[in-house]
Figure 1 (cartoon, rainbow, N blue to C red):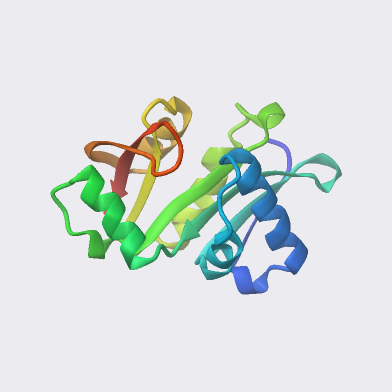
Figure 2 (cartoon, rainbow, N blue to C red):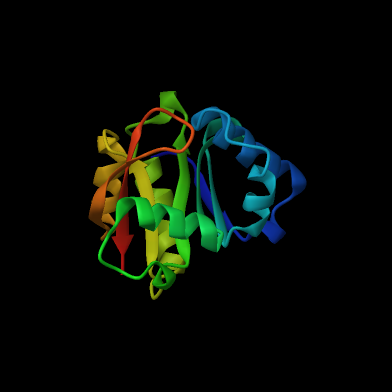
Length: 163
């Protein structure tokens, strides 16, 4: 893997860094929504992977989800655990298509998780996203509950937990 990974709290990021992060989230996740910039500002950590020519080609974040959002995900997946124990969500994992397969996503997710070793973290991914499922398993996440539909897109999601 060539490049540099930087982990920052959102308040330590420049406006341009947060805007570029949001741009990749919107590109990678079908537009996202109007509240995205506020959720980025409220995140615990943001990861940026820069390649050659200082091009941002990978991102991920440890989010602090709203209680209602977290409860909704756990209700749909119906795992046999208390959702309140999981205060952080690993998400917004995106790597530019021409950079995939180089270990960037695994690296940035591992670095984020190293920041919060003692915390319970959850993640959701498409049930057919084998690359992300592999990364989550490598990082010690386990699939729990049942598949559930995404609230805006026509795809099935699964819930993974790291206690």
